[in-house]
Amino acid sequence: MLSFDENQLKSVLIEEEGIEESKTSFIIENLKKLDDRLQETMDQWMKDRSISNFNVEGVDLKFIMEKGKVNFHNALTIMNAFLYDPNLAETYRKNPYAFSGPMR
Image (cartoon, rainbow, N blue to C red; front, top):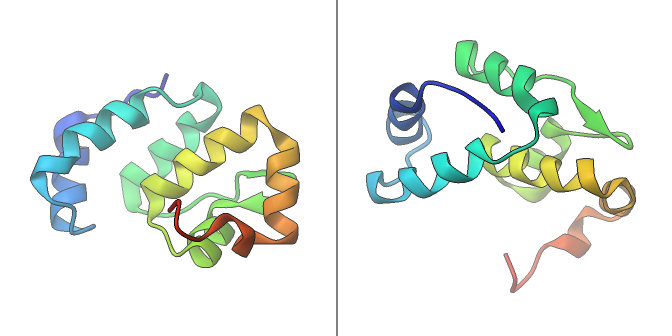
């Protein structure tokens, strides 16, 4: 489970990410459930909005954000799935566009 200052994150989500306040609680609760291996990455982003080079099977957060056209918290959630299924990360690396479409 990740730990972070929930009030600070809520403020960042609203003021910097343009997330509606009504959606922030859901996002925060989901982020708290992510794997501890992502804690350092989350801490770094909370500190200065920099994005670490953390990767699974050659897929890093910047790649997910760019190819998936998602923001940091969504990329972190996707990375969490890759931690549990590295084959999924490898598939994403080879064809990230296969992950987009009506289900998004």
